[in-house]
Structure formats: structure tokens, C-alpha cells
Length: 163
Image (cartoon, rainbow, N blue to C red; front, side, top):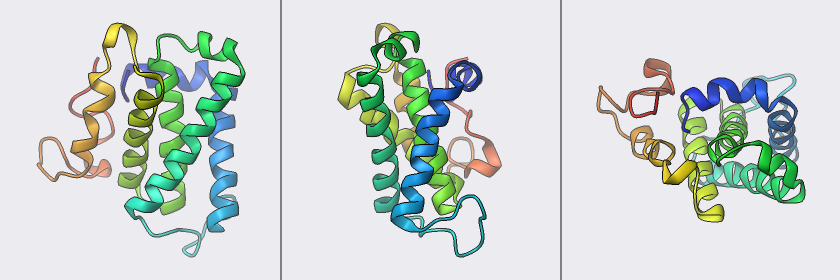
């Protein structure tokens, strides 16, 4: 689970599904916020606010959850919840970061998606191993040098993720 190993394999393993959810998000920000992600410019960003992060990440996550429910084979293929959670979170985080031009907003979108997934389907990983999927939210809003530096200074995998 989390941003670590599961995500390492997820992009290749879930290619078309991850693409679908991400492109849905790109279409959403283009239609709602007029963000031209194909020809990005300074004017093609929205303000990085919690409301915008909530809106975009929630929309993309709920779309993905609806698709998993509509296509149960995909739901079962993306095993244990960890992979589903990572696919949904990656699409939500990518879309949020693209819309705002802010990597920290993208991480907040990622973790909001994890919490929405947990709320909707009760678990994120095998046997309740989902701490790593939930513990990052606090780190994105703190500036403790060992845990909360902005994404550009620490990377998304540091420090609290399963290896």
C-alpha cells in the first residue's frame, strides 16, 4: 500500500485503467476550471486551496470507485485494496497537481483519495494493513524537517511507508 512499492508496480500493471481515471480528471479540470493541460501556461493553473483539492480529488476518486463497481473484474484484478487505493490516489493526486501546479496539493489529493476509499469500502489493504495509506495526511501539512518537507525536498516516499 501507500506510495511505496505498490505504486512502483501499479503504473505498469494497471496502465489503461490508471490512464482512464487520470484522463477523466484532466477532462474535469478542463471543463470546470478551464485548465488546458495539453498546452500549459501560467494562466492554466487554479489557486491551490483546500476547497479546490477537495473538489478535484473527490471527483476523480468517486469516478474511479464507480468504474470499479461497474466492472467487477477490474475490482478483483487489482488485488487486496492496496492496488485499487493506489490507482485511485494516483489519478486524484496527478489531477490535483496538474490543476494547481503544486506538488503539495497533489499529495493532499492523494491522501484525501485514500481516506475517501477507506470511507467508501472500509479497507485499503490486506488484513487491515492500511496504516501506510492513511498516515501521510499529517505529513503534507507539517514542516518538520524529518517528515514534513514539501514534496520537492523529500519525495513522496519518505518517511512512513511500507517497504
